[in-house]
Image (tube, rainbow, N blue to C red; front, side, top):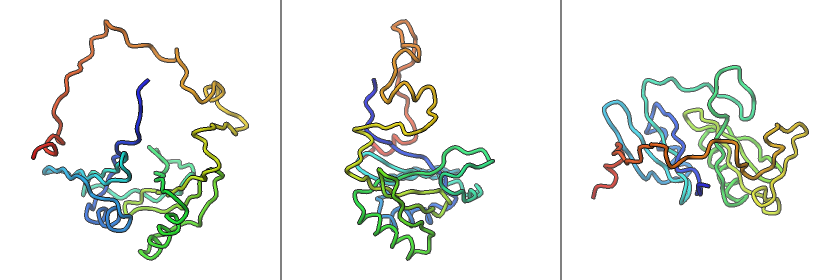
Length: 190
């Protein structure tokens, strides 16, 4: 089984990179660690944690998405509901609530979800954000829990990966394993 170490990056869209930099770097305090560009777009990366990044493609002609409440279904096609960014402790939640409020952004009350405390807001691109800190006494990673009164059939099989659900790769499969250069190779140059 592959060993995962976090989200390398989420790739979002902005129509104003400077506004996005001001929010993610200057307000939230996430370092701008890489920037790529071409004649038609920019692609910038911000460090969330030592293993996690959030990236933005700047497409100036794109319309800003409509604001959608976190966790509320929509009749429109959606790709995701919201991004939840983990913070270390409740003091971080309070600091972010104060910073976002002072900067004029809507921020929810602090919510107790049983295993995390969270606040909700939006970035300037209308991306729905949640900032969450774990409640240390309730660690769903160490002790998974299924509290859905009507769990799906696959959920009833348990929390661990189930073998036999997908075909296994075979030695006779011809898969191209060459590594091809992408636009980011410029970042490896001295």
